Length: 338
Length: 254
Image 1 (cartoon, each protein chain N blue to C red):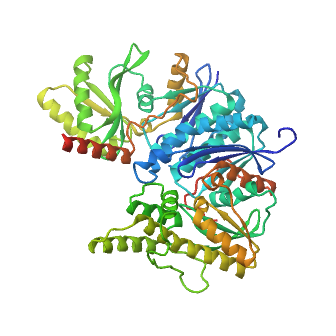
Image 2 (cartoon, chains in turn cyan, purple):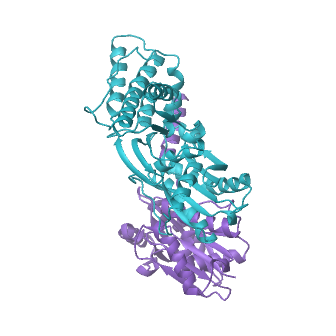
Image 3 (cartoon, chains in turn blue, orange):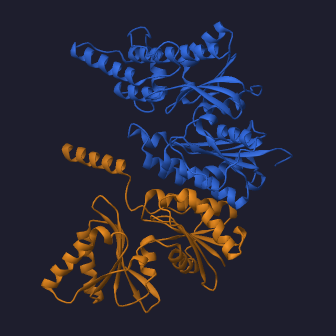
């Protein structure tokens, strides 16, 4: 407690961002320090788990120190510690977990394990002071593509999920074959603005009428086949057109399924979350469709879309309020289901 | 002075406390490779056993590696978190040396070897001088066994010791090779004896980390938590491949 207000600390290290945040009363960010390893992994064309783990270990204590200093609180002021315990890279997760457990034990503070996706959804509580469940959440990131029925702060039902690649994964792979580099999401988003989204017709995969599941492994192959075919015919390709058409195909499916889910589950609010939620085309299309259907759309600002600890602290606050605590045996779960 | 020692670099994790009378208490777990889940509860149990509170701890000794990369990281991140919360310093303890340190005898050259896979061992060689100092003879490193044995041969000439004691989980896959090498040497130059430590001396132990850690602490080797680094003795595989490819490109260019 500081000045009569609850203080929550969040720790996130599930992939390639080391982050620690301090929140006041669950929704006000006092600090949200993010140390990104994007540059480290760029030369490898993707995140290398062993290298990510090494960097988390080197960085986490400095990030934690900075988060406390920026928030002008001490560890004594912290009421609860939230930490991502899955899903993610196991070697990366355990750095955050070991750190959270060490601090919690030494300072005698309650510990809360947070599901990474619940964290992404909770980013919206920080952004929108008035937002409360129930709503429909669309989580799109490098590791996840989920449509979730959020009934309460800690009550979730997954309505649809990807059966193979996550949307962000497809973006990374297509960016690689187009020679755009890593990470693929922002690169494709940028170059697609110069391209024609109708230039190439990539197949939209809906997996049958009414299905809320996704499949994105086919479209990556579709792009590869198209590039090879054009090359064989000796035709020059326009990367901007390919990127824009690929992006259009992916986003159309995502947006249509999200709207379908909202209608069939009688939801008047859609909440966007995850790294790909920063994609400008997705926001544009979803906001257009939501307006047409009379649905309110909520999305976090870009900094809260990436992996960050503020969202983990926020989710931990609401778990703590309901007494959902963990003990010091808390483990890492790389494939933790929601 | 109570020093808390953490050992998570091997298959089994353990923790220990050593006090100013050099009395050591230890807690260990027989469950293998579940260090993240087991470590904090083990520290809790150890403190209860010693009737101490975490605030009674004055410093932390951590086994720095080599060993399992994941295990090293669990120990070091836990040590750093405790140090950050409690405002303590940390002393990093070389894991290979803890083996030699637990056998204070001057006769033999002490050779801890860990199976590092990829046809290598993490190994080093030590000898006790005047039953006071445990001296390093061959630097800790990731070696192909034959290269390590060549190094041993060189230092044997300097130390005039002809007896070797091997420890560690590297014995299991390499015992036969070491014996073959011994016989071959004796074919040329008689008098070399090689022995293998009993199983109880072949695993990492927090009590050894505590004992060596205490000595290092007294010698002023404690560090601020922001200075300490794990000792992997090996690059990440992807990094190694990248550098190999770059080296190849450079030679092609030349």
